[in-house]
Image 1 (cartoon, one colour):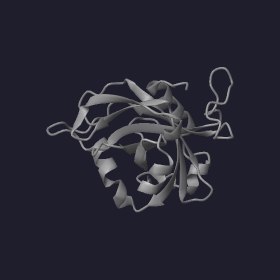
Image 2 (spheres, helix red, strand yellow):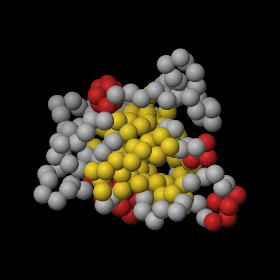
Image 3 (tube, helix red, strand yellow):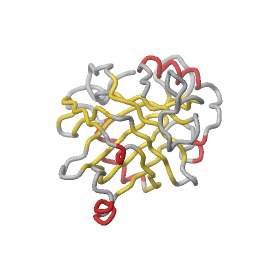
Image 4 (tube, one colour):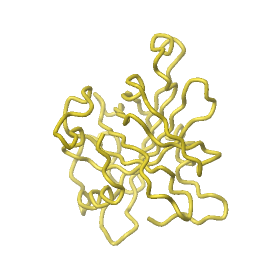
Length: 217
């Protein structure tokens, strides 16, 4: 999958932001206003996992939040917090990204459609950071790409993962781990849930390390 640079993502966010954001399908899932948030999750039971032995993901949660950009640019940025739990591991992985709607999100540099199950070109492109913005000096290294789209109704979110992502555990957020995802771990249908169910995700990607002030973007 083509990975836009983090600086390119910010520039695109500025380009798409303004006094009034252009409407996108995500507006049905989360209102494009500062400080609005939404939570979507999927927990796979034992029966499902027995039927899909190659699926390693047991739980996936997405926390979305709009915030004002901390610069002279006018507009909003959509933050993404991602949590993934996997078979045989009691501790979830977390990642953080920033998203913008792209009319050609599902096309690579050769013009080929990257994710066949997403039968259209447009989606929200989320460039993930290899380390959450919780340290005074945070690496600009990219951790992968996630695509988002509205599901069939306003309470469902489709999540399309890159073939691999760099994530962290909550207790060791400075130690990055790269996970590869097979075909059964790349496309997920999540359902809206109470915002309190995203508290752990929000904490993992936004709570500063002790003694470190919040990072200014």
